[in-house]
Length: 398
Image (cartoon, rainbow, N blue to C red):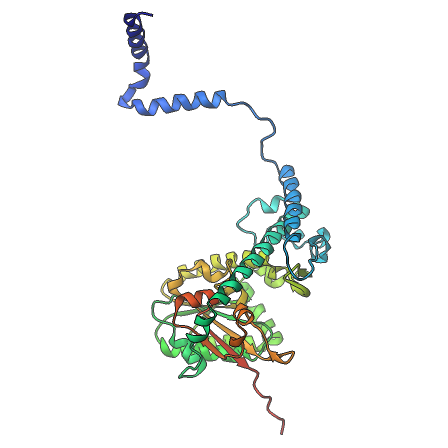
């Protein structure tokens, strides 16, 4: 082909394409659209790629099996109880047969699944959460051991004030949420926590405060029956709530009404607590779901009181910063204070181990007030201040 003929063909092509390319003065926008349609038309058609619930349910069965196989390969010291052997997770006893959504509010498709598929979804998620927890705890223990000298030499363990007044003194005006964790079923902790609320109110007499707690359900219509039940079943908590009201602290529930009023059968966490029966919502996946649910509740409450100091009172496992799914990790660390209140009791001749710090660094197990100036050490330990309270001596009847 001669150069003259080539130039003629190129000119003719440009002239023919000009109306489409330069219409409205936007040539660049026209070309990609044409090319995209051409590419899509040239793509091979793949059959059976549409989403369907039956396909999803089959996928969940496979996922549960694969995650269980991975879990069984981990070198966990205690023998594993296979998820299929958990009586609480049998299809007939699956709690979502009453309420197909439960706290999985972030999964709109969940209520459309069959009970068996819901069960497999939970099992697979919990299997993965157990494996993640085991790996994370292993790494955490190594990190704590590596900094053992710093933890022991830099600790603050002799407060100048009352223990709870000292804890309150650590909370500056920049703090917007105080995480207050406890170990359940030790009734002498609640009076101590009431003392902390009093110390905090004394430090900030004019600041608006809101106590949000795991121990009450959300919703005004649920509050009264829950408080009536609490006054009979756990009067120590009810006394604490009355103290908060007297101090001008508003009280809000964190737990969804479903979890609060519908306790499912007991189960075991394989490899983590192989002999201890726990509620399924205390499994790693259950804790993650509840923490996410609580965060959304706190965000809603925060809209009502944007400048208030929120006091989040719940079990320590929910608030421990060293736990990757911790509720505390959902808030800016520089605006968050984490305090733990544990029992100081004998367990088989030794002071009871309460957290990873006690397990990795036994020398700190007997310290009743524990903190460090270093934020790095606090984050690694999972708290800013930890208090251990001995059981008060019982008064002899006269």
